[in-house]
Length: 283
Image (cartoon, rainbow, N blue to C red):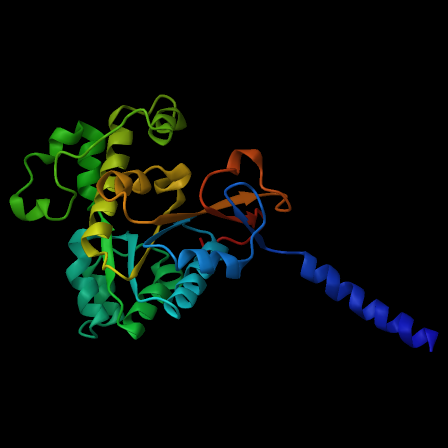
């Protein structure tokens, strides 16, 4: 009898060890571990979710799809993403209506190189469920103009093209920590217009989120974590324009040891996906 029990224990131990080796851990902003199901319960109580990703992080992309599917079981959704620029909305709409093929969308819109693996599943889910999918970002050529010449560079845009950006002038607080930090990211290459270009992106994304938010529905927006970390960026602009809406943020961080949230990652968002730094990237 004892040899049988010993053999069973030997089989169980590796299984338990494998379960303890996680690819990621979910935390709240205070660094307390939280379950996935508790996070979903909180998300569906809100009006807007800002899902901050690392653009090449496989876990973040997988969770974006899973979170979207699970929220869709409880709420009507509107989806939107930084990865689509506003002047590509018409092509995106045609694809969602089945009037444009995947190849046609690739030709008509400026898709990111990781679109097929990381964002196509989200767009296809929206298509399947007949959810709107909003291209929220400013056309990159206009952000580049701001980065070079500041906000006045946009004053000469034709009226029709101004429809693709947040109404001018936008509010801008150069003292927000995230914008100040940008000035130190690339010593010798940064200038005061770089955070202005970032703010123009943030303001535009917030604007189109609000333009397409439907009362009673949940808007899930996918963006680089820096655009909403520390409740700045897009979140700040949403609060300026519509403080009555309940917005929740998710961020993605990478750590060598994911058993405890590092001090520098505390407070980055309402929910924080802490990913093992050895996780394979999508590109």
